[in-house]
Amino acid sequence: MPALTLSTDVIVGFCGETEAELEGTERLLRDVRFDVVHLQAYSPRPGTAAARREDDVPLEEKKRRLNHLLVLQRDIALARNLALRETEVEVLVEGTTEDGRPYGRTRGNRVTRLPESTAAAGDLVRAVVRSATAWQLVAEPPSAAGGARAS
Image (cartoon, rainbow, N blue to C red; front, side):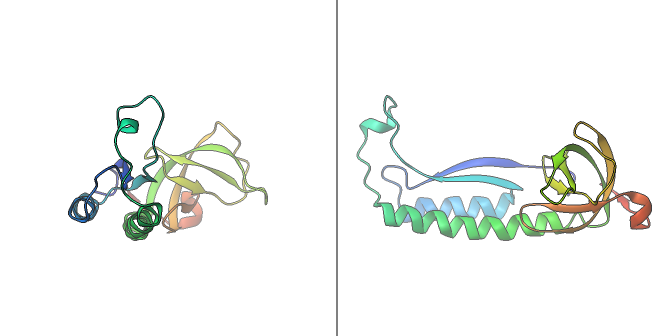
């Protein structure tokens, strides 16, 4: 279902987190295949209930767990974005890059780079996804792409 965008937040290394719990989080990411996962290593925040608990997962272990899930999510995001190739999307233009190319976001909040054009911030443009990375789409106007399937 490429048109559906799913995102979530995950904190790794929370007080008392076990290796089995980390594996459960990994299974969840593999099974659900979120488009975007905001991953963060746990750190105590004053005034919260968690701050009263023992922060017993060492920093190096938090980093290891975080990096492990970041690599997994990068691969999932890339596959999800590549599935959008040759689909037509609407992009709300947010601005231009340093080299003058417009960029914006799709209705699914995917960052999308566009070719040089007259599109300005605030414009809603239709474009066909031509390529993708884990973190962004690259698209062009439908006429330049030679047709597309609907997303």
